[in-house]
Image 1: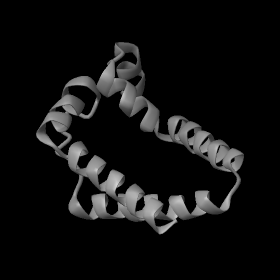
Image 2: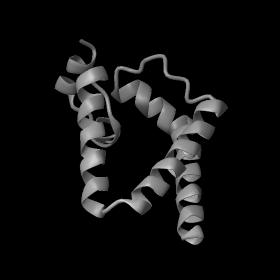
Image 3: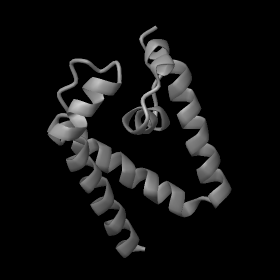
Length: 106
């Protein structure tokens, strides 16, 4: 289990580095409504890793269906409350959809 947790930390830290690279930051500015996006602060990135690790340990203790259902609920909640979530971020980075950009802008 420790090896998996370390692997998850490594993957999340790698994502944080990539997410804050000039290429991704420029892509966010270009493809999303985040026109003035300058990247995450160090504190934000550190707490992203901490919360990922908390989620890792919760998921480790729960049945798979609970973990999947919880992820779906959180994605839908974020979509409803702030018109943004991980799914939309990935979609807009890979294949920007103008209608989503307009919708997110309110």
